[in-house]
Amino acid sequence: MSNDRRLSAPGQLAAEDRGAADAGVLTTEMPDQPLAEFALAHGLRPAAERPPIGRYLKSLWVRRHFIMAFATARNIAMYTEARLGQLWQVLTPLLNAGVYFLVFGLLLHINRGIPNYLGFLVTGVFVFNFTSRAFITTSTVITESLPLIRALSFPRAALPLAYVIIELEQMVLSIVVLAVILVITGEPITWYWLLAIPALLLQTIFCVGCGMATARLGANVNDFSQLLPFLTRTWLYLSGVLFQISTLDIARKYVALLQINPAAIYITLMRGALLATQRESQPGAQPYNRLKCESWHLKPAAHLDWSAYCAPITNPDHYWLYGIAWAVLALVVGFYFFWRAEAQYGRG
Amino acid sequence: MAAGEPMVVVDDLHIVYRVYGAGGDRGTAATALLRIMGRKTRGSIREVHAIRGVSFVAYRGDAVGVIGRNGSGKTTLLRAVAGLLPAERGNVYTDGEAALLGVNAALLDDLTGERNVVLGCLAMGMTKKETKDRYPSIVEFSGVGDFVDLPMKTYSSGMGSRLRFAIAASKSQDILLVDEALATGDAEFRVKSHARIQELRQEAGTVFLVAHNLEEVEQTCNRVIWMERGQIVTQGENVIEIIDRYIAASGGTPVERDPVTGARVHSRVPLKT
Image (cartoon, rainbow over all chains, first blue to last red; front, side, top):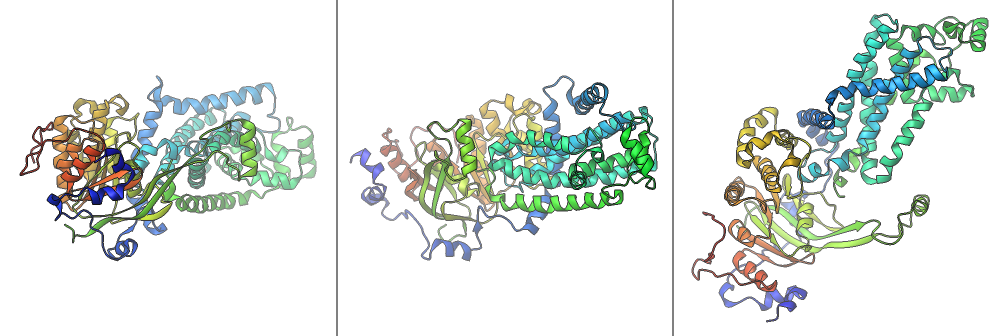
């Protein structure tokens, strides 16, 4: 009986080694029919199967408390290492706004033609920050949560959803800071402020949809999360965070394209809700007047509000429709895209 | 037992891991760019054929021990049964949900044990109330005591795996897959976890146990699968016989057994079965 032979010839081993003592013992018990048929006949399902969308949504709903608890826990864990703790949630957007104001507002004088440039800028930075953070954090959610994914079975869409909720919590805090800044800069508190709620809601839906898509992309392609910061920075400069898109010296159709890109849409909606100066100065706010519009183009700093007399490129009434369309589109496509790969997450 | 209701059917399963960038000078920016542009030549993929044609059936109430040397495919097999690894060929069929408990799998390392318990319970689909009700018993079972307020990264490996076991075992899972999670526990915890596994079996579940501690397998499992190089050497309900043969095959000292009961003469584990 040589031990090394046993391992290389497993089939032989089982037959050769069985003594008389265990002759009556069943070594394997396989059913007669093919195993696949046998399994299905007994109501078993493939283990790595993706659940149908209806059941998936239902199990996601069952996990709603998990999603909230996970978001809260992550939020706390994120700041435990810092002495100032969760204060950073407010400090980060404030510092961001401060840097942009210093560079673009005070040093480069790009504020020509925009009344209350500080309010304009900070609103844009905060709103855009929510979108870009949602993109960046969700791109690593699958790899960061591998231990959890490998240990417990739950609908994986809960993870990107929780990450977007973390960013939403941060955004709500930012809006409180923003409201204070706006009041200081002389913006009146009006009923329009209530429009910030649906604007934020639509943006959140948009972020959830996109977050699901980036979560899947980031789970498969590691290079993706490396690339993402550059993409979001380009997006920042294209979305009118720092300047008024309509003042760009490019063809009208490109202006229109930039204006209806989702990041710009949600920024415009939020500015329209919170900034009276924006509502009053946006093109189309006053009946078209060629003379006033042209003199604003020539010397914007002299007549800040006269941009209102120009013809709008994108109809201001359509912004809400675009906002709804982007939100629905992102959610449907993003969720479907994420769900398609449900069985793949956690391979690593 | 043989006529029972099947819970896990593994049908001619093949699992292949693909390891990217396994060798050579592929890591430079230029080659990466070429790879992205070309999209087809991903030169350095190594395929590791971890499971080669494994078939078995596990029934309701079974506790199946999976034994074999390191790298024989035990952990891979468990992950496939848990539905975490897509099969290259063949299929895994299960009845109900599977939970996998691995020794390395901390849930969320930088969170406290307390939060891990709550999150784990909620993730398994318990309601808030159920979670609240089970929380004390989970913490008590894990025996981590005051450490429950500290982040899990401060835990010893034994404490961590005890807490994870306690979380996963708190709900009667249809299929519980335990991958060496008990290896780091102390003697007292082994007794408790052993008892809990027996309970789970009675609650009409199936338990898989991967362990290098053969005595643990012997005392916990009613069936055993011996794997070598991704294939099953032998499997069956004659646990003691298979384990003795495995010990002999790997060159270990034979176990002294009571000729009548088959129990070990010098038991190292203080189990009362």
